[in-house]
Length: 253
Length: 253
DNA sequence: CGGCTCGTTGACAATAATCAAGCGAGGTGG
DNA sequence: CCACCTCGCTTGATTATTGTCAACGAGCCG
Image (cartoon, rainbow over all chains, first blue to last red; front, side, top):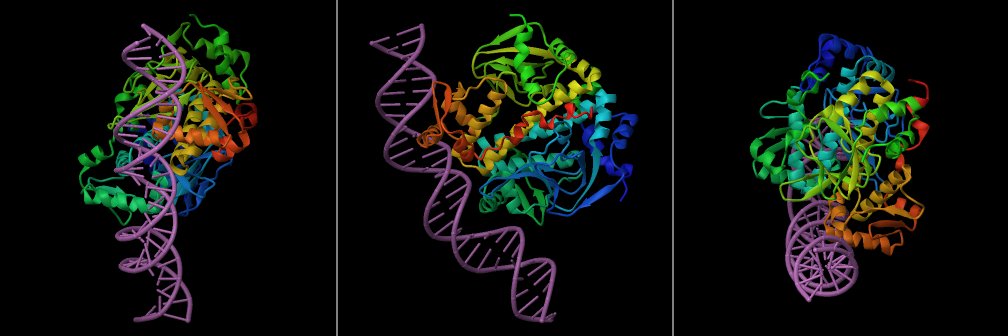
C-alpha cells in the first residue's frame, strides 16, 4: 500500500495535541516518510535488539511494544506504542537499538529514513524540537513506569497503566467515552507490569470487583474514571498533553 | 565561583566518549553556559516538579537524583546523576518538569539558559544531535531500570545498579580499579531500587557475603567484577559507550 | 552528655510467584 | 459434523520474596 496524507493524520494529531504545525511543516514531515506502507504480522519483531537501523518506524495502525528478554527467560515490556507513535525514533540519534520492538497485533507502519530526518535537523529547528520532544515524551512515560513499578502495588500499577493508555489513545481519537481497544493478553500485561500472569488475573478481578473497569475481548471498559485515577494515583502531567506548555506557540522560537 | 573551561571537562569527556567534538564545537557548547557556578547544598531540590525552568542544569560535582513522591509517601528515584550529566536537559524541549531533582550530596552546577540551547539548535545540527543524544542516553537507562525492576529480583537489581554506576563514573574518569564513591544511604538506595531499606540491607549483605562488592563509608569496592556483572545480568549495551556507534564521525553528517 | 542518623537484626505479615489443574472458545482435521 | 487441540482465562494450594514493625548499637556532632 502506498502512503497518502490520511495515514499520517494520527501522527499529526499527536504532535498538534501539543504544538501547532504549519501546513508547510506538515508537508516537510510527510516528505520524510517512505511512500510505502508496510504491513507487519502480529507477534513479529519490527526492530531487533543490537541492530543499527537506518530508518525509524512510525506506527500507523495496531499496537506495538518495546521489550527485552533477560537470562531467566522473563521478558519485560518497557514501552507500549499506539497508532501515531514513532516506535524507534531514538535510533536516529542513538544508532544502535538496545532493545527490540514487536508488533502486538497486526500493524501498519511507515519508515522515515534517518537521512531524511537529518535533513529536518539541518533545515528546521522547530521540527527538530518537535521530534526531540516526541522522544522525550516516551522518556517521561518510562519514568512514570519506574515510579509505578517501584512505589505502587500491582493493582495500582494496573490501574495506572489503563489510565495512561486511555488518555494516550484519546489524544489521537482512538478512545471513546466508555473505553478503548486494548488487544493484549493477560500474559502480555504481566510482562508489562512486571508481575506474573496469574497475578494479573487476580488484580484485574480486583479492579472489576470494585467496579472500576471491565477488560474482556481485548477491550477495556471504564466504569468509574474518577476512582480509577485515584486507585492508580494517576497524574496526567507526565503525558504533557494540551497546548498550555507549548513552547513553539509561545513565541520563543 | 565563576566557570572556567576545566569545569566542563567531565561534560566534554562524557560526550567525547561517544562523539568527537571539534575545538570550535567545544567552544560553542561552553558559551551556552552561564558564567556563574552555583553550589547546591545536600538534600535540597535543584529543580521542582511542576516548574517551567528557563534553563537546564549541568552537574559539575556531586550526585543528584530525579524523583517523585507518591500518595502513600513513598518516594521513587527515577534517575541517578553523576558529574558531567545534564540533570534536566529534557526540560528544554518539554518545558514542564514532571518530577523533581534533588542534590544527593553537596553539588556544584552550572546553568545553560534555554535561549542559548535554542541558538545551538538553530545553528548547529551536529551539536543538536549531541544534546538530543544525551537525553536519549537517560532514556535508555530508564528502560534498563524498568527491566531490572520488573524482571529481576532485588539482589540482581542492586548488582545491576552498581555495575551501571561504575561504568558511568568510569566513563568520566571518576572510578578507579577498585571501585568508586557512592555517597548514598541504604534508604536512598531503597528508593532507587523500589524496595524497602531493610531489604536493601539484606541484599547488600548477600552481595558482600558472595564476595562481589563491599559498600561502606559511601564507597563501593568491587571485589569480583565478572561475577557482579553476571549476578546483575548487566549488559552495557544500553549505555552506548564507545565511539563505534558514533554517527557523527562515520561521515553521515 | 544527649540526640541524631545510619546500619543492623529478628519476628512476623503482606504481597506476589509458582505449580497444577480445569474450563471455555475457537480453530483444525478427519 | 464432531473430536481434538491449543490458547487464554480462572482458581486453589503452597511457597518465595519482600515489607513492616520494633529494637539496638555505632558513630557523629552540638
